[in-house]
Image 1 (cartoon, one colour):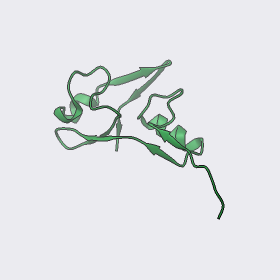
Image 2 (cartoon, one colour):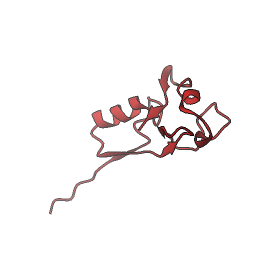
Image 3 (tube, helix red, strand yellow):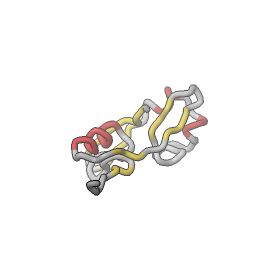
Image 4 (tube, helix red, strand yellow):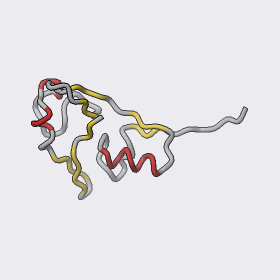
Length: 88
């Protein structure tokens, strides 16, 4: 049996992209990661959101206490990159 090392991108590829965003997940796949690791939270109106913590940067409320309409307005910023919260 052949032993292979398989890489899992924790929160996606976030060296350049913002973690837990669509761009970070796509880039992880392009870099041949075997899988990604993320956490899923349900909003108050049962929309699934990918995020590591129970709060999104810039919000005071927990994801489970928010409606998606509140979350979809949030822009995330890192290294001159702007992205939106990722849905599952």
